[in-house]
Length: 290
Image 1 (cartoon, one colour):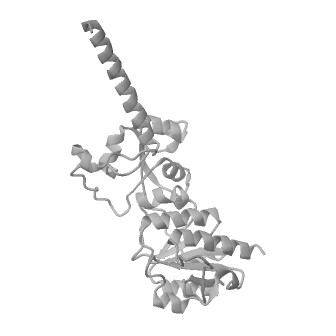
Image 2 (tube, rainbow, N blue to C red):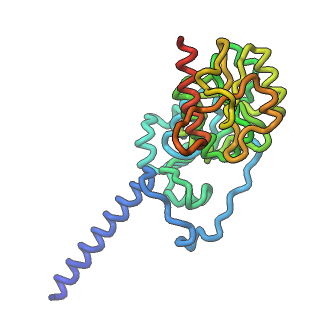
Image 3 (spheres, helix red, strand yellow):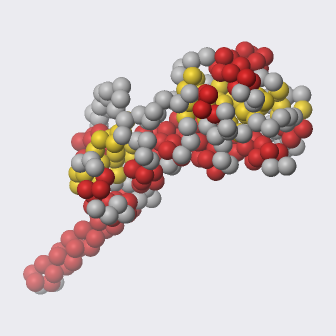
């Protein structure tokens, strides 16, 4: 091979390598492939999450950021976005957002979120959503109550189902439950902006308040005395679900109006809380439509 041919081959290889890297980076921004593990990235091996102020939240991912920007109740601070992600957000004129918009490289976002966050090239610094009160639910007919469900991925998945079935709110405790965060919002894929997420201090007191508002509180329990479809009463239902493994706490079991179980004829008698929530919401909505 002549020197000219070697140079041509080297140039072609460099060109194709650049195209491959660009294609890979674009897929990573879209969330189709994960960001490489931090053990493989020396520049990220010592990454530590930033210390956040009490009123500071970082949301990420295209669906999450798009929903947050569209939510008039959000007080946003700054949008950090790659050029490709900005085009996919379809914002139009960035000045219309009323906040600074920084065009950044993916690694600049990862410096804040960490190397494992599938951010798709979009990160929004924002403030927590306004606090909601139980009395605001008086016009709702179906809500969800979570009894110490701690995994933000599960709570996010429950939020998606709750929005899909038009539930009025999700109620959970301040302790032993995830606060508003990027992980929770990403798992909810925009649903955090579409349903009130109400955190209360005492669950038994909150259930009593729901009784006063006319709700039947119906706790899901694998040992419930009757199947869910035969346990509904009244015109408003609050479904109460416990954590995986432990289920409902004893105090919660004693406070709800009714305990019921999902009818599962197979060998497995319990489901992931997000799957159980989706089935229960479907059955509740069918009952309320009668």
